[in-house]
Amino acid sequence: MKGYLVLENGRIFEGKLLNDCLRAEGEVVFTTAMISYQDIITDPSYYGQIVVMTYPLVGNVGFNEKSFASRGAMIRGLIMREATDFPSHYEMEIDLISFLNKSEIAVLTEIDTRALTRQIRTSGVMGGIITDQIDDLEMLIDKAKQAARDLQGDMVRYVTRRNIMKFGNGNKRVVLLDLGTKKGAISSLTRRGCEVIAVPATTDITEIMKLNPSGVIISDGPGDPEAIPYVMKTCRQMVGQKPMLGIGLGHQVLALSMGATTNRLTFGHRGTNHPVRNLEDNRIYITTQNHGFVINEDSLKPTDMVVTMRSLNDNTVEGIKHKKLPVFSLQFDPEGYPGYSETGFFYDQFLNELR
Image 1 (cartoon, rainbow, N blue to C red):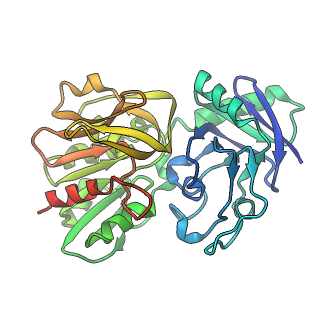
Image 2: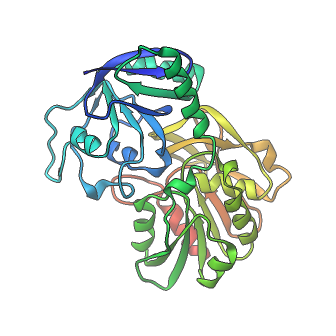
Image 3: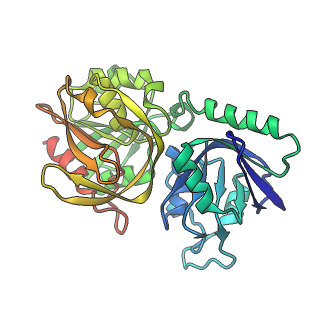
């Protein structure tokens, strides 16, 4: 069936709808990842977004629940040049299109993804709508604009867990403030011998301290960090109480809680190939990222936080740490499970602080 992507600036891209979900509204972003589409589709940091895959062929290995980043699909739409007709992998449980159809996620293919990506890079991230008809273009543009506005509020409330949950056993108890965490973060800690207590984003410092943690992690998640002042308050009160690690959105929230500010990027950092320089040893790491906001470096100067890592693509802040306290944060995902990341040792650094 013929389908369309209508952007809020009026640009229309024509393609083919591959499943039964005929409409999706959200923020249109692109990722440069060549693989990991299962991780992207189920990553809470992509909540509410229509994701453009820049790699031309998607779905080669199908889908399996073991590779989910969270409990299920989080995106609203997926756009690609071509979907694999014959996926094959010994662990495959379902093909990509069937999974998205089951999850009611709109899929648009045969799109000129290079032209669409250039549009986003030039004009910036914007609202869009996937649809099977464009008779009332003015109405569709209004809906696309509204979709972008809807994602400017608190997105964490949609993806955070509702109850306190315990994972693993060990002599180090880590409280994970869940702003939209991925399963990989929890497994990285439990494999290192930690007891992880994952708590909702609304959990205050009194409840956290009752759990008697050795340290606290503020997880990754979706949206604007300034839209979740209740998490900022908790972070501000926690600094100096326990060792702390912020990841992704948690990295930005930690900076805000210390008095810094954040800026919105034109088109964000999304992909598995972002180079980052560690300023402390001058080493360079290839990282996985998914964010649309960054810390304003100038705003860090009056605080007790210093920059430890930078993006080699645009020189933005990728890591900060406190001058005196065991508190640091990372903009990228340090999940350290085999074959995924070379930066899992940052978890080890955090756990060393717990001693």
